[in-house]
Image (cartoon, rainbow, N blue to C red; front, side, top):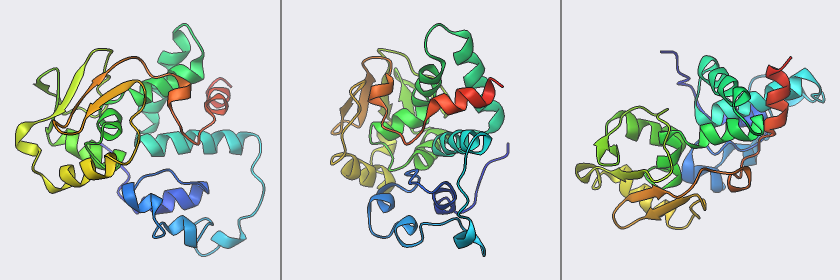
Length: 209
């Protein structure tokens, strides 16, 4: 399956905003966006044209895709499912992205970034209701118990993630236990619970054309 394997900091520079793809690095002075806040490449500094219309809608979609590490087909499937359900399509789209197991693992402090959380899930270190789940796109539900397997709790990246997460607030729709490296889904995430630099309405407008 196709997957972006390049330097993720280039993605933040391309979008002109922090996508928080590198964990602690994104909040430090080592963030490349702090030093070079322009698009990557030889002519990056010269790309100063104002983006409007379709270009703006496309940028919003690309930001969301890159933050959650989804491909176009999967992202469009999320949109189509949201458009068929009752409610605000944009908010339902964000809700599906937030309910991904790799994102929940990141939110609960099992990893310092969504990319790292994806790896932790893929390697079988996460359980849902006591059963191993290694599918990053698995959708969690209210009441689900998510935890790090006992054998993985001593992993360096997990221990570092727990220390990093202790200083970052857990969303209100989740409950975290940093000592046991576990958590629970208290409710479905609302838009006010998701602090992301994305305008989901522009994504809806793009797909609804």
